[in-house]
Image 1 (tube, helix red, strand yellow):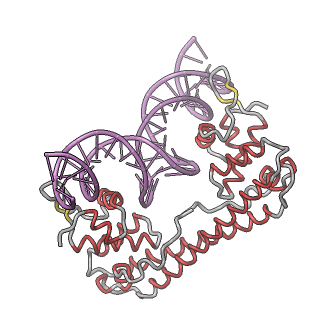
Image 2 (cartoon, each protein chain N blue to C red; image 1 turned 45 degrees about the horizontal axis):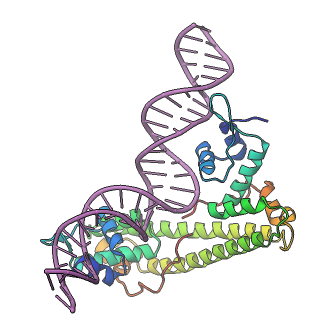
Length: 144
Length: 144
DNA sequence: AGAATTCCTATAGCAGCTATAGAGTCAAGC
DNA sequence: GCTTGACTCTATAGCTGCTATAGGAATTCT
């Protein structure tokens, strides 16, 4: 099976530019080239790219995916590292959720300060944002 | 009160480079300059920057903050727009939380496929990532 | 043969900073 | 008066994970 980049994109739901980007980043092995310098892919590339897309749909970083791919290339090694990576990723997601829930509480508290339909100079929300009393209490964890 | 950028940074917990960045982005008004071309700030800048930092700690984008600042400059106008902006922001946070909770479910399901301590070629997690059966079910909403 | 489509490389842009280079300013100590 | 050090200046590049654009070459359709 010899397909070009457009067909690979169609089969994986991945944009053409993104495929080239993964190649540049070393996530996808360099394919053979046709006489006219077009990339020629095979089944193994489809599978490889699907793996990457699956990981991305789980919000893994390209660094994490790179590591998983490297591990996958050592079939005899123990898979503890894979488990550890996933555990760490799950913890990160949990932390992000907690940070966002805290954030939401702060936003709701701020929201209660104004019922709307006031002149801006009396708006409770803008006053709450200007007031810095709660400034350091609710620091948000760094986004993803 | 005439302070330089380092002192402003200290008082607001904001990095010097970030202050200059906000100025370049039009969020912070250009301050006066000293003879040696140093930025000279006053009380109003401290307050202004605290407002920005407070908004950022609530995860607002610089675009949202720019809009809020512009509204703040029209004290007589009705504050409905401020309320609307905050409501929209809260909804966004809620959606992000839900997306992350879904994501967590997918990750936990994947995690269950392996107990660790296997050779990598038998790792249930890597197999789950290679298998694309659940690929399009759990698409994650675009991050923040 | 000519037009439409696909492909190529290289570069810049998005958000919200952070880091670096190379130079200038200013106050204190010797 | 001169050096040291802390601070400041501008300009530029880097981070993540793409996306968009320009300008060209290859292929495919009619």
